[in-house]
Image (cartoon, rainbow, N blue to C red; front, side, top):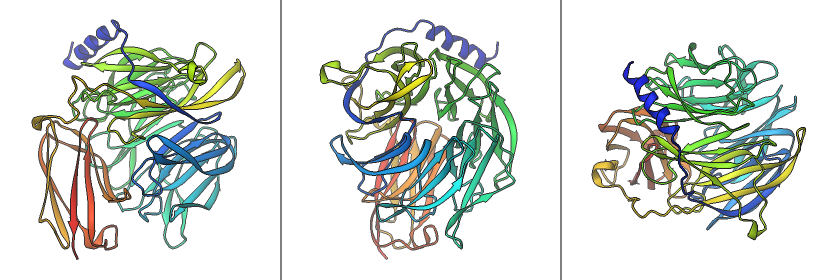
Length: 478
């Protein structure tokens, strides 16, 4: 038995001995209602706080974060059909725009962010959008948008063309039918690959690798013909520096982790739990440097929202319940789970999109619920000791054109490098960048950032991994 198979056997044995954990979540508030199928967090107004968009059926809501866990309705978007929603700076103008992808042969809608106001910029036909992902596939500085469509069996890829001031379709990609998408560097070669799950088809998922110039080939499959992959969430579960996949969804009631062997192939998997129409996501909720899992389920068979706490790569399970004494609804179907530190207190909170099952064939709206992370940090050091922290510095400081940023990682793994204004507006990013343990450096040129010169002032450079983060102020003087 090789080492990876032996590790998987031990993990499966540990998971079979699941015990009850203590959930760190408490109900924050209800937030709107409806059959809420999709949500996404993003700071679209540049105030440094994550705002929220929620896709329902026919009407979709943008909520502004007012601080201290309070939200107000900023806009209501009336777009026919069930929707998948995503924040993305598709036109590279340094603010977050909004994409609303619809199913049932309706149209996708593109909203441009014009000074914090969302303006309908474009509409184009969709056979049935199941998921939306994005990334600079060909490394030319422009984001490509990927729409998976489960009715016509094809991806649809668009990119922004400045001359026409619109998104235009791009042909020639080999992607086929899919219901869930991930764009990420899966094989550690510093370009973006595409993962496609087939939640509708009882088929294995596909791994398409990038040759570095935006040409893709089908490299491998993962899962089996009994798998349903309505949602795929990437993350480094085993701490080996490559991206693993948390897979859930469908009538085949299994939530499982697929382990990356380092070459972008998934030759082993770990069983997490059996949950009908599961919607799973992972993050370090208890601040102990590993990935925990939230699972929402949908169905008439006792739907729940569950928390799996990761303790040395074994999971303990707890059910997150609403507080009926506060007049909040009992948990019904959880169609969607999204994660952000919405109250800005240093730990990760939840939004859950809900619906109620009236019968086997009837789903009606229910109150969506925010869950505040109330994790007790006793015994967990929020500020990691120096040998478990990211070390970061910049030189020269201040600088008048180029700045070199040197940093050191305590562990190998993927990181996200981002540059923000003090108001929280994203200027530049290099996401899902695989790095080895030890010292690294990069140079940024503020005189030609994305083809334009930045104004003098303070900026924030951030480096984040699955479990660690560091931020540095940069002073730019022309």
